[in-house]
Image 1 (cartoon, rainbow, N blue to C red):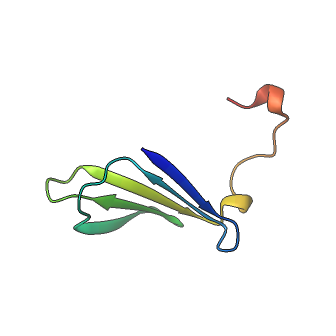
Image 2: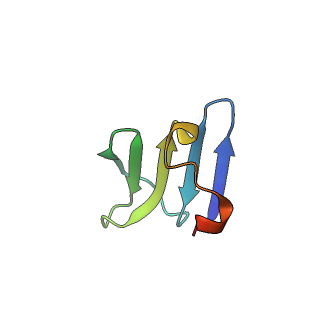
Length: 62
């Protein structure tokens, strides 16, 4: 597993496995899921990372 963040693109990619990606599907607007030939999730790309989620103080963050 690995996480990559591109601050210029404001995008993050969480790689779950290094299996070959055969299809990408939109999970929700700005969130794409990559799947292998068996339909298993391989990775997730999140666009506009800085605009997502609440700006909670660290003591409230999980």
